[in-house]
Amino acid sequence: GIQVEQSPPDLILQEGANSTLRCNFSDSVNNLQWFHQNPWGQLINLFYIPSGTKQNGRLSATTVATERYSLLYISSSQTTDSGVYFCAVLPKGGGNKLTFGTGTQLKVEL
Amino acid sequence: GAVVSQHPSRVICKSGTSVKIECRSLDFQATTMFWYRQFPKQSLMLMATSNEGSKATYEQGVEKDKFLINHASLTLSTLTVTSAHPEDSSFYICSARETTGDGYGYTFGSGTRLTVV
Image 1 (tube, rainbow over the protein chains, first blue to last red):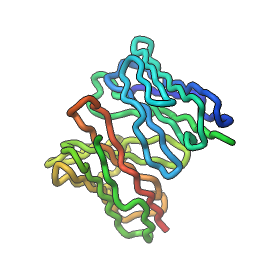
Image 2: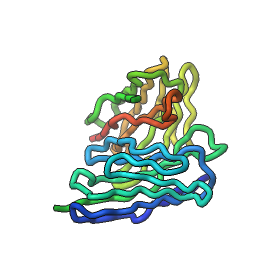
Image 3: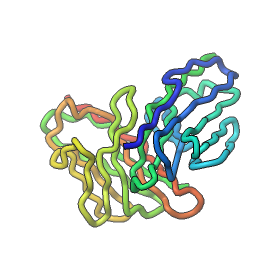
């Protein structure tokens, strides 16, 4: 099946810093989403972005489907950004089952 | 936007008992829902796909007799962990996909933390 790798696995930032999270996938996809899992376990949908670029406040995401990667940018990070960030993909020809990436654990410190 | 409600959020049960977890789509109909399991510091792993009005399809290695799934209506799927044992302790999350509007994305419930003692 499709492999979805995220980097870095862990990241510690000072409040106010910027960061880029990467998601690489091994095959073509119909759907790609970025999620933030907060400390209570809730998965919050950040972006639905199978291709192109989207922005929402301090967050933006870019997916280059032809090169099989997606990037999530976090600017002016805040302590509330802490948690785990997952990308998840729907492989082409893979029905309707999302495959999750390995995740990036982010901690933003004062 | 699409909302998926999951209940209970936390449950502690004795070994050998059964636990039922509910997943509801609040503002859309979902012919298909999905159940995931997440161990500490790991990613989400799909357990099964719940299909309204028909049998669930389980991923390889998931015991269908232990994890009973019922999808009796277009807005409700339930996961029952039968004869629970401590190794079943985990975080269980459901999701559904809204296929109208602009999104076509998946929405997740808030999860259920199961502890079997």
